[in-house]
Length: 128
Image: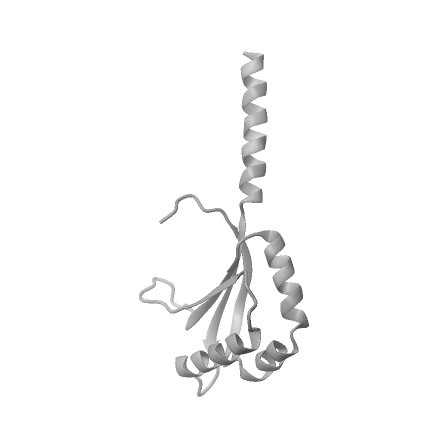
């Protein structure tokens, strides 16, 4: 019985370490459009931002809009970005911060105010 318990603990530790190493960071920003701005302005920003970002790989992003919700204060949209791994996120953030073209677009073009800004760890449990 003792051997079984020790084996279960070791296996559990290995699986936990594997789950953490497989974790993918996902960044969420919940945003509301600034006065006079709308989704057309957001998509204009996205076009300029993608051009400024260039060939940067390893980051996938979505603009998500609610179709229905039970929450009364749902943001106008969510910006969601994900990396394949924690190390890819670190490398991507370093490259992003060093990119002067992106910084210029970010400081002038962002058409919204984002009160929610959070980073989550995600583990894929099923492929589609």
